[in-house]
Image (tube, rainbow, N blue to C red; front, side):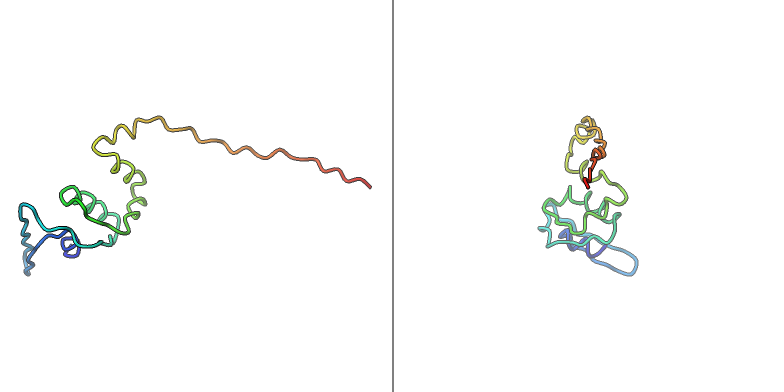
Length: 106
């Protein structure tokens, strides 16, 4: 969590029993790229990016293992329903190639 806060540019103080966040009105600019350890942290970082524009996340494709459509929905915000309501093209059935007759002349 401390790594995520640092990557988001949030000042904080950690004690044995608490975590105090120093959130100024305008905040600092995000610092560098943060490597997400798992899909749940990626979801948290995606939500945090709404309050910290410019936040850069690496390893973000890990969320696709638990929610395959997440990034398509996220990229179509604030109106993801437009993406979800678009008619999906039917999957094409791969036709078997026609068999060829091979004539062997003797």
